[in-house]
Image (tube, rainbow, N blue to C red; front, side):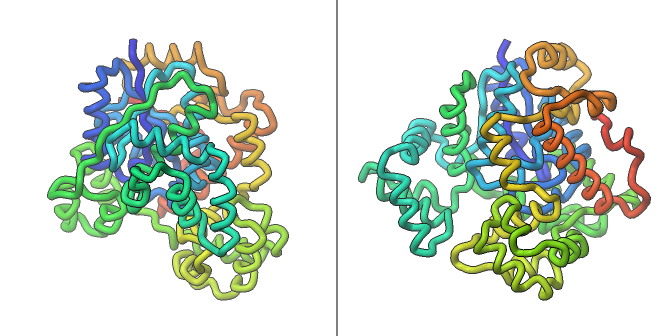
Length: 403
């Protein structure tokens, strides 16, 4: 039996995701497909545009057999931590044979070569030099990669405007660092066309009225369109945007001093000082992130930092979780005919498995409990944003999707 894992945000699920799932099933001959999906918040530093249960249903209809939630602590993090947390979680399943990811390169040999460069002796000094010169981490990383790569490898061409190549490299590094038995493979991402576009473009197209749905239909599988229709047709639901976080961000900015701010993930003293200095200038989440932008801080880092402030994700906790390889296996949904897979997961899981409501009350290690509490906080906050009526009861929020 072959079980293949896929890491995705599906925010929303589009034709590119469906192509990857079909490739895993048809070309890699997977008996089961496990998708590790971002939950209520996503890696770019904002709430997911649609509820995780809706996105889970779309993923199951598009070809997955089982969907697990990547903890928010790892989701709201730079690529290297996002990848490490995702690989730790797939490793903890104890059942994943292969990890398949999309990349702009499509060449696993080239990505493997690039993945080895950060471990060479000259890389860290080159990276530190770039950071000390005032470059952002991505710019310093690129410069260090170029300095340490063989001269015949066009590093900048491979990595510029290629976020999936960068993420793929981090997956490969994480697999090696954790001595994982999981075999990596990659699928060449399709270029933009009349049927393929980026998830960010699709989020911009998400309609406020049902008559505008036609702008999305060429790029989304039917399963995803159906979930969007549910949001559009139910007045109790709405799409969630980053600026919906504005009020709670203002509260947290008034509550936290410079030392408090520096303790949260990806903030640090320099960004903490800048946030504190401008704390009274927050008109909206996105405008405040723009205001904070300087050469040393990317937009993505700033947005993630603000989300980690809102959720009170502390750098010290995240570091301890990574070092101890702490994670949770929260089941978002599965196919009815994949129950044997769930049974196998229960037998081999090396981390707490959460399927039913009572599983939330099991005995966890302190770090695992903190991880779970942060996820539930993220989910509760998200629920208050996506619902125009009273939030669901607790047991309904912890439901598992079965199709």
